[in-house]
Length: 542
Image (cartoon, rainbow, N blue to C red; front, side, top):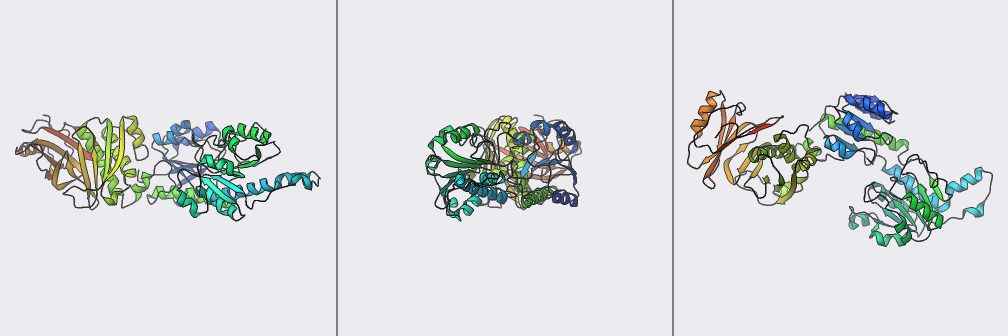
């Protein structure tokens, strides 16, 4: 899946007009149909190659299964909690978002919420509209010198930090991914959560909604906070336990809350909305003209880049695809796929642990995209359909294969390069080592037997092993000639443990050959074409 044939893309939520315009300019049919009911969406998605949504459309597993041609789902915004990413991954469907498109708008709304909490601006404005002049009722507090706890220090969290520092606030925070050194660069001191709770005058959350962040603020954590702490949630409903928040407001443990998101939208339970110390908005974090235009433009550009095979940005579940589009890494992905197919051909049904080791400094961190490539070849060799870099690792795990990636330093000889890829099945003799000659994947070593001239992994191959010193080649060539299959190349390995490997490049698949060749211990045939196929022991029966 180096590029996607996107003929028709459904836009099922209102998007800036530039989104459809950019898609159409690239030759993609953009179908703008916002407001579809769930049954209508199931009907419309059946012949679509792509789907673009905002927040309203719920892309459930049922929707994904209905999209028989679906290749990519785009979320014009940051979160993807309205998309069943696991179901999409299982189907090999790429999920993308626009992580930067609404960051500024969400950060500015958060800052506005903090100001409104400090000075009770919405309540004072409502009082004025009721004809009152209640100056004493709305005594506020300055932000200068107050402590702001920021939970989640990604793009939005850091934008909030820098803006609130301009008001003289002390910014502390927590993020399990961002290092303390990185957060210190934008003025946030990272602390453990247990130390943050009692220090904060204000707390704002900017994390995704995950099992680990659901109910992050709850009865227990509110009890550890300063009395009167004020809370902002412009991220995702559910990060703040709404029941716990209401109890904290009623007891005075929480002095006020500003909410742009809710567990249920729109909320049917109005207890929080109606509380006098709660400021709330109907999920307006990305509701600016600038954010909508950026998100619509970014997601359209991402779809066009994928369709043209030129770039991949914003991938949520198929990061390896970006490497498949890069001319520098594409040949390595082809190598990984070829080695995976060859290993499946040699070892039969692969089960248990599979070690993918990248050798040489240039391939450091390459395991993140080479492991899915190897798993793709492995599954294709086992007859799996609809496998690609998006779903290969998940499907391999479900098939009983645990792929682990490691890094090594030594590159075996001969090689002709400073990098190599090694596959090994622990507890078995199966070990393959491959590399590149130019942009051509080659096999350097098979089960410890090195090839003085590496074997190009392309076209139709026939591999066999025989006792060292035996001469089965004439008999093999006789079988090939009888089947009118031409020999195009020959590579022989050095002897290991009294045996040698031979690899023949052929003009046609060798799987249909009949008969036997003298001295051949075992033979394997495979075809490294776009639709790979392989057979174990089928070319030359023992």
